[in-house]
Length: 545
Image (cartoon, rainbow, N blue to C red; front, side, top):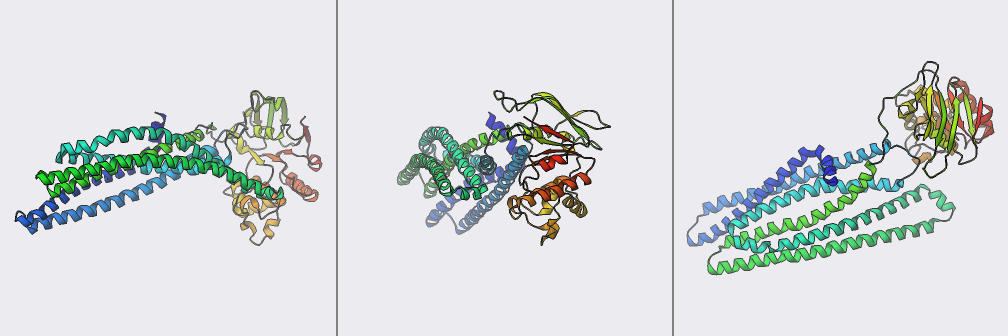
């Protein structure tokens, strides 16, 4: 039932396209039956002309209708394929956008439930499988079922006994299909999991390529990929073998239908109960009955395959989401106060912060220091409301505004510079505009100057210099300063800087701090740092232990 609800919700926006596809299938079914009927009449007319019971005019009319039906089938098939292609592409793009929105608004809990490579595999491959199944396979399944019923009805009209004898293979096909469905879904889930492992290994290895080379671990990493791909290969071969065997059995059963129809027709002709035209219709109708069944035997597994992908997509859609809220911006300089805050990443783990209180007063500059793993970055995530404390409260305030509890709505008041290189591929300008899409050229140049990143203006392409992936064309220190400039274009009055100068030399760091403190005298600044120079610029030092 959960699958039906999910499929209905996913397919509903494309109901018009689905209706057009179904109409194409309806007309195709009608054209196919008329095509067989005209074919029968043509053959009988051609035979009758020798006995003088038909004339050339009748044959000409029938031939014209026959050609028209043939052309209509081609046009309808082309129209159906075009609409399906458009629908599949739209569904794939919309579903990826839906998942991407969920991931962007995912409530962070401090854990990484899924590897990033696995998530990308779900957003790419699982979405492709689902879109193909419900924009192509599902409508085709309905259409082939309709064609099957139309052909069967016409065969029953022509010869009841022949139709019944051909249908004896149906129970066999249904029984095999039921078993195949369960087995294929299990095999497909294993393949999707294996494919995610391969994707994750490739992404992680490419992301840390220089580290693998420096550790001389490239050969080992390649061997690990071989093992993962061998495991995936074996899973795919098992599914292919099973699908091939099941289809072979079904095809043999269906082939018997042609044999029955042919022998039946030959016997009828010999005793005069079957005409040559009827014999031709028998063979075509048997094909139109068994071909849809054979197609359904491949379409049904395709839809069943997709259920494994639906499960994997559902896991992403079930991730806890931040509740949409209207931004709450505090005019003037804001402060931020923690009172009795306790936080642990897991119920059975020790507290990272235990009954912690501190007041970052408006306009103050505070250095947060302490050994690695003590909770400095956790504190920043709590201030950003990326994490929620188990006890205590965190509020923003100013001279004119009373306490406002931190939430996603208050993030507009905070300017965050994360640790390390956080540039995106694109130009320097593209990265700066992430801080403020409406920033002018003058504002960007001013932010670069405050961040001691004037070097950008001396580059050959200035603001349009390409950063490539992760800012690979820049030094670590240059990338850090551009990231600071990007943050300074945001309107918030509280700066959160996490090891923002770790790649800078002492002289550049001193220039940066002088410019920050002089250009933003009224801003509340919170520095996570191990550098003594930074502490010298601060009013307070918060030592975590």
